[in-house]
Length: 368
Image 1: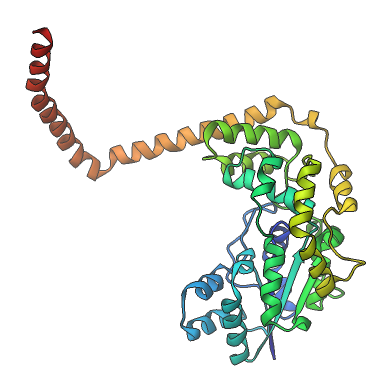
Image 2: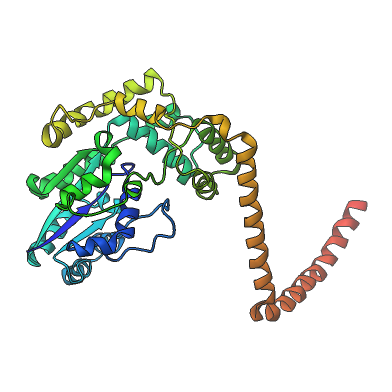
């Protein structure tokens, strides 16, 4: 019987690191009977990726043709009996789409196993806040941003998937407890943790890291000045320059902590009772995780001076200008430009001639 392992996230739980690992070890995984297909090539070991599940996600949310979905599901297996799909997009499918996926795998004789990581609320919120700074141009303080949070994607997905898929087929882990051995945890679920040889450095890699305080402040100011238009490019430049650095958690006021407790304490209790238990459960604030993130391998902010960040952004700006200049040169040399440019010049001259009598009239009236 074939088995499909669906790793749906959640967001900010090391998905990119796992996806880079899957991509780099695709051949080794195949030797153990696991296919990781339909993934884009990883260019470097710290690349932020979206995994290999977007094609299936797009069909589930847009195409009613079950046979088309069946074909795509089978494409993930190749010649193997087990397949891995890893994509945070999948955490956004609704109950109806989850049911379509389960029905498709049932018809194909495939066993569906869901793998999902959750985090305690404050570590997740801090990481999500950095993500909207890096990717969506956020510039407000975290205390101004927190009141806008309505739901947590982690918990909402688990609610939806638990209504459709048997609990025995849903593997949920507290990311705060396993983030030091994330790859090992995944390999244990696959049943090959004791057999597959891997480089310890690859298993401990952090991808798409959160920000240090001075980086966060710099990007917030940059986003405020320029409307967030270039937040993704600039943040990538900063992060990729020092990908091994650990993050620093932003300060959250007691008032904001109270908001988070009021909104999410009941959901936390449900997740723990349903999947994790009290011993390894999530909470509002995972103190152990928070302190580890602050103190483990932290580089002093003085090691990246303000001028260093300015220089990185200056390099990015120069590259942008050069790329724009090349684009303009290509347009100028293109045949369509050479044909239409004289016509535009003629039309501009005609408009100026047509406007000239009107300007004379206005000047005459004003002089009277």
